[in-house]
Figure 1 (cartoon, rainbow, N blue to C red):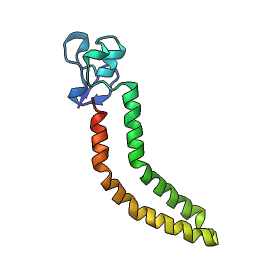
Figure 2: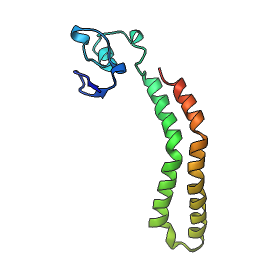
Figure 3: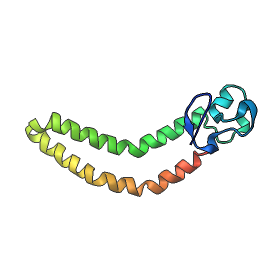
Length: 120
């Protein structure tokens, strides 16, 4: 992994602008921000809309895991003391915990297809 000399971040070599002089070892984001290249010249640059779409895609992919973890945390801290609702909440958490890995694996093909659409 090469380091950008402007922002000092590590990126793979595909994320760097080719050239010598001031463009040597500069990532595409820094090159566009410092007017070394135009945004049309670097197809691997993620625009803001594309970055937001990718973040939303990853958020949808992993939200089940977050909600199951938060549910177990709430159950273990607050929910075990309530008589009727604790057993209902526990059953819902167990079913959700068993269903989450299955749903995660079943949605992997769709996730990879949508991610390929959002990859420049």
